[in-house]
Length: 336
Image 1 (cartoon, helix red, strand yellow):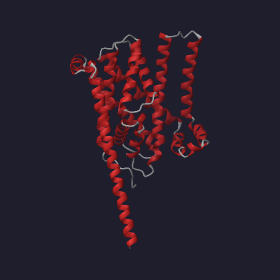
Image 2: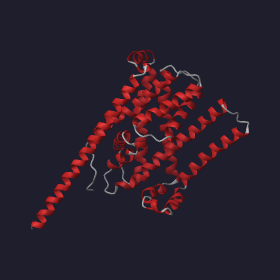
Image 3: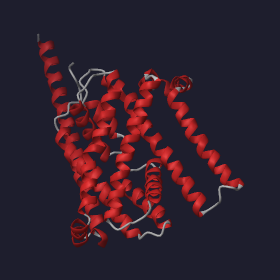
């Protein structure tokens, strides 16, 4: 009897300690999210292009463009929620609202982690099944398909800027660049549609073998399912692009449709391929990329900076704060 009482007390202490750690972890996420947001606001406010007077003038004269960008905000994450709802069917059927909640939680946790790795934890913690870590592969697949859309459009942007400002297409260097871009996109697409082959290679590497189980689910998606995921990713990419173009126009960056498209595509590509340490580093890479590409087209870097910071605030910072509402009730374990 005494032994049972002692075990009960020990399990109670473990439970209390675990709850305390979980509570502290949530407070850390909450504090870091607000800290990074505050730092971003302070950094943005140091630029005259984002002063209150400038924003007020933009709202008075370009309210339609700002309204379009704002309306596309829930659409952007709604498309991502639709993709997650579709991919998660391999494990658990969830409603669109549950998928939207999972996306916001992942966005919030990704906001305070390197290269948005918290997105995995956020979506997994919102699932109800006991072995929910198996969904890691589905999350990775969604990110890979989104990355492919970014690389595909970004390749067009690289071709546009290289052939317009650096070397002609009708030259050995120009042809080499074009072939390299075609090979990269073809290889990435082939890898997505034959992931079982990649799994076989990973199983031969001893220190990766223990993780193969989480990635192998990617090979269970059919060609039709992969195609649909790619189409949803492409749709989200176009929505995100539409937001950026609307903000660029609002800030006075006036270009042709072609230049808008390739300037934004180049910016998104550079942001995606360069790992970020945290939210502030994430901001810096996007802004540097945007100012570089649009600077090549003779645009004022400060106007581009204002549009890019506004895009980040509208599309990342604000939804991350909203996601805090759903982070606090999360549970690390599931009894189901």
